[in-house]
Length: 296
Image (cartoon, rainbow, N blue to C red; front, side):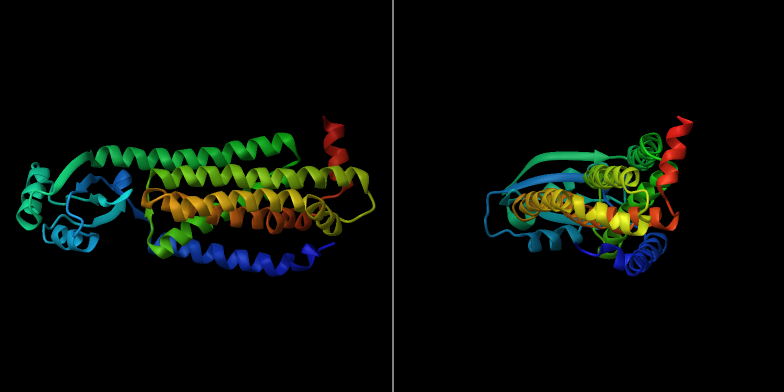
């Protein structure tokens, strides 16, 4: 049997440091919001000239004074996804871009898609994203509170908070773009982490009824070991799929898959070393379960 409980204090300290660093980054550095949340223009280009590359395109767009510009290959090597702020709010910006590209590279570009996101729409999307994440955490709290005792609910929410904050903190540290797909990834992380935690909590609750004489410190370790194979199989198979998407899914899915990879790793970690540690700190026992069942 693996002694996970021997490392509760060490990993709790590590998690505290990670949360402090993540919160510091989020407060003072902030997040790199994409055009979904700060407004701008998205263009999908296809070039008929294979000599044109991302570097030459970026140099040309930087000369146009459009603000922050992001250029990535999209699908094939001749397909490009371009995002920019259009900070001067020029009305005929697409015509101007086409003119500049034609002058520099010739008539080699097909404008396959153009999308504009205004500041009002982007602020509404940002607010909706924050509401979605907050609401998911609240609903999870309510579910666990009904499903288990309040001590379990607190442990689950702290684990979820840890996973979300650390993931966003890493995005802030690396200045990775936050868009709608990242919000979807964070919401998926919340569900995944909760699922892992509930599986272990179910076993803890069952063992509390079965072994009334074993203290919670040892009992959580027993429960983690009994569910370990299921936890590892789920995590590893999920990570294999996510790594495949990250390396072979193209630039569009890199942000989403990276957020999911980070979330799955920390979600598995927190279900063992955050959620269960809360039960130990609160000294949950057989009496806790019996009292709650008597009330019901």
